[in-house]
Length: 179
Image 1 (cartoon, rainbow, N blue to C red):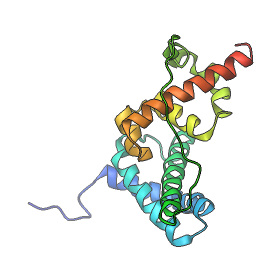
Image 2: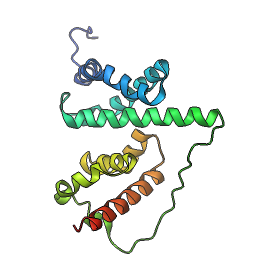
Image 3: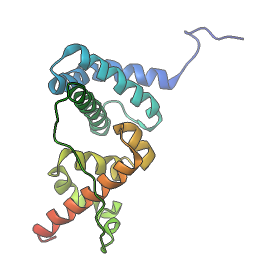
């Protein structure tokens, strides 16, 4: 027996619709500010909603700072990827990122442990946006490397390296502040 759309209750669909109604214009603004093109911004928002749908089960509250922050990160990263792709297509060489794994004898995971995250959160906010986003996805949202790679549209190796570099940067900041 098939259920009619009115009698079938799909909480994920309802949640996605509410996300759309709540954040569509906000997401368009973020994408437009990066791309300066309304049509590309709409493409970015569409891609962002696909990413959100893939992670809809992890969004608990629609109108929360946590959800808005997550939506901001997803939209911003997709827009930046679009921007970089356009620049590569135009053969304009933008700053190239070279991820080199640096050996480190100090265990970094001790510093970014969940128990002390609140203590260093203010320092995380001051980091480079790429580092701030990757640490937030890993330690605040508890996403795996595979999930982060899918959200940011980068390889798992790049996720691992960015997390490593973000932790290095955070440690330097904390040491500089005497913490």
